[in-house]
Image (cartoon, rainbow over all chains, first blue to last red; front, side, top):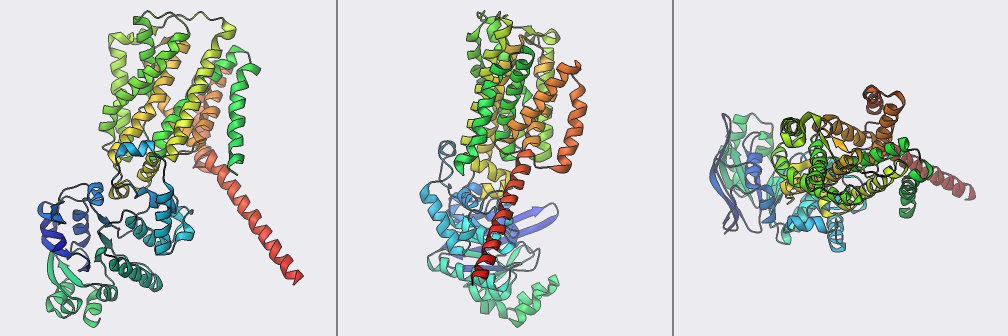
Length: 256
Length: 334
């Protein structure tokens, strides 16, 4: 049974059809990959699933519940976490405070008025997670001072605070050095072993092919091929899609 | 270190509390009352706009609503002139908060520059209405019950009530900064959509913060009306009020606890002094303009942040120097 399923989702921005009847299934406990040429609708699909963009048509289901059209905070509260392609952290808050923002997914809004910023327990959890991604020693630093790679780790850590069932990662390895890519891959595997499901958009083919159980290729707003990394690599339609897009990643797909 | 950082606050409080004891000239204690009123307003304004980054320029609505609550209730209830009228200030604050809810619900749907423009537009709707309806006294204003306290004593109750307002606004800002609610407002300032995606109910948080901030401003407006004894719609619903408190917060340091207080202390006392010395109530506008050019050029984040950065940088330098000296020492010993 699929944990997260997208069924026939369409979305247009003016005349541009960003998504056109896109369907996708992510089964529980898997690491799913989502690849495709630039502009094929991967990030828009993420935005639809997480409530940042409304779908014109189609349904998104999470644990058999229709979550189409919910607001981002409601989607998050149900257990879908995400990171952004360009990392989005709270630059003028400390690293620890960044973590604390995410700790209240099931808390009423009035409760926030009367309680302090954090409980000892929440701080302990936050520090544990920062330790997990390897930036615990930076907890008191202003987040704006972090390097690009450290921001990626922080973003991953604060999504973990709320203990989501599925995490959508938008280019976790983009613009990050090899050591850090390996560290991120290792963290994803460790979390997956504990039961967290992943859906990953990534252009780094080696990263995707080595990490994912299933890979879906998107092309012109639609899912083109789904299968194991090996199947996808051999599929001629995938090559065509990248060829048509005139993308550099062609050789990586073919050669990798 | 924590205790050390409280010393300036204690000194400031003692200085403000002793001011009317040392300086007894009513002309100067009057300046003191106005300055404290603006300190309370700037601090309260900062509690929403400084924390969330939503620069609201319609707080004069709250000030005016507070002032008119004081005037209308004291007149129509035939209140005996005197200290009992102070109790109308919380009522003014409450009504200002209630009035702010629909305003916030509309204006907070948009962000940044659009938000600023919408708040100004809403403000002018209120100002024009206040000037044109009968019960505000229109352009001839309203005269409040005359309080016949002795001239040498008159300012003192107002001074200490205003000081109480400043303490209230500052304490509230400090408490909010330490609460989850305050953290949520700061998260909204840095990246509202991201905060929403992490479960922060941004609309509820913004509206609550906006309405809360109006409470102290409404009380300040009520106190002002009682203090001056006669109010006019065009002076309590004054666009310069908003420009002033925003500039005070910017000068002192937007989003900081001490910044708006310091900014208001400097600017309002300076303005009142200019008015008193040169009997020209618009001269300050020219000087304010020049001052702000200087601030934007040399300390764009405000006085408090400017000084704090200097201090931390010096501390870091000294620490580094000590560490370097120790290494050399250790090296020479070996």
